[in-house]
Length: 120
Image 1 (cartoon, one colour):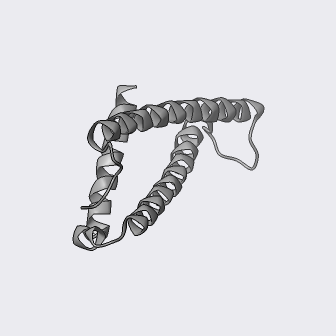
Image 2 (tube, rainbow, N blue to C red):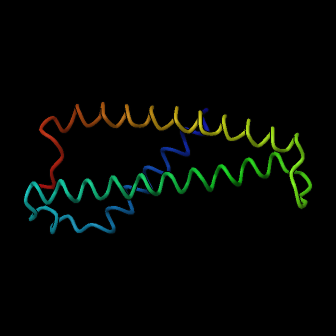
Image 3 (cartoon, rainbow, N blue to C red):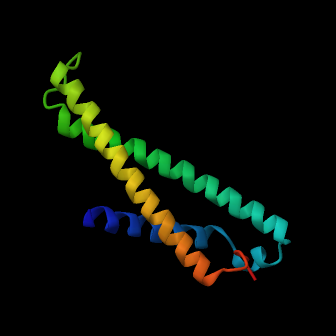
């Protein structure tokens, strides 16, 4: 579980760094609150899409590598079963980590941004 936490923390740091590079803070400060909310919503949507893409990629790589030892034209019943179990465990773990990260972020936001996030 420690590896998951490190991975999630690194992904979040990378996400924040990339967003800082993409968004000019001086420009964002000049936006109206409604425009700021639109930017925030867009960033959240892009983050959700990126998370889904990462989930699918990681799931495919990890479970395929673990379960398919000798690729062929079809999957054996044991490979199918292994893939199903692997996917189930992977998604359960992903959901647990995502919920923990979301709660942590909400707790941090509640402590520091009680009036809502702004760019001013």
